[in-house]
Image 1: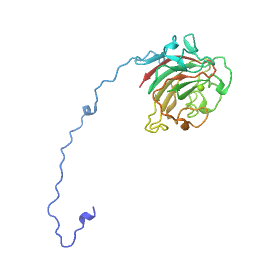
Image 2: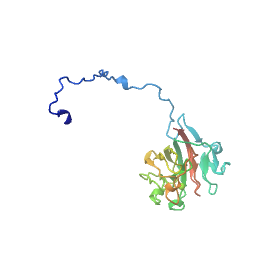
Image 3: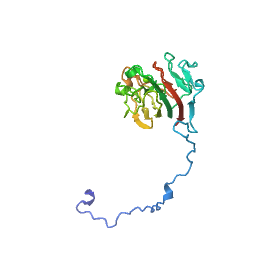
Image 4: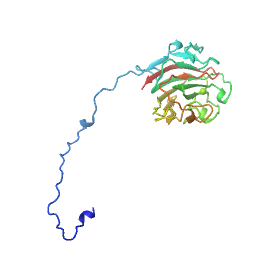
Length: 254
Ligand code: MG
């Protein structure tokens, strides 16, 4: 701006002002200008309780036929048993996996560790919910049962401890509501372009708040060493040798 005021000696100062560009006056804002009406938000029906599947959910276990939606890891009928309408892990039967594969989702699942308490630390009521076959939300009897904090119930196994321990007593039903955002990959198949994220509520209480995963959850080793490009994946439930029961499993694809 200073330079604009300096004139070389002998030059005459301009007598006309530069033209000022005029813009049309903006229309006065009204409330309606920021209202979006279309398309209408989809209408669905929620259940009577949080355990009930909303009308747009896929029911993955409703108390009877497990083989409708699940197999063992080889694609055969699972040896997990149904007892009183619940799905119970059987030692040595291995993980089970959903026939369907999922990307982003909201998952509701209820679980119960054995009322007869045996073992300690990771050996008590251990199972797990694996998201896209790679990322374990730990299931464990963490009621009066210390273990490493990033391996207790509700942990993103060995990556994030739960914010609080809100576990009920063994033998009581507990809920996980899990919101999962799948990773995005670019050209590099060994790195996330956008990392996967997880939010978990246990028994209605927030225990994982949109945490950013570093890689698949690993028993041994640093997670980021194990990243490999992947697309949609199954849900898996872990057989860790303890008869953990599941019920009311439903999922909403996002
Ligand atoms: Mg586990």
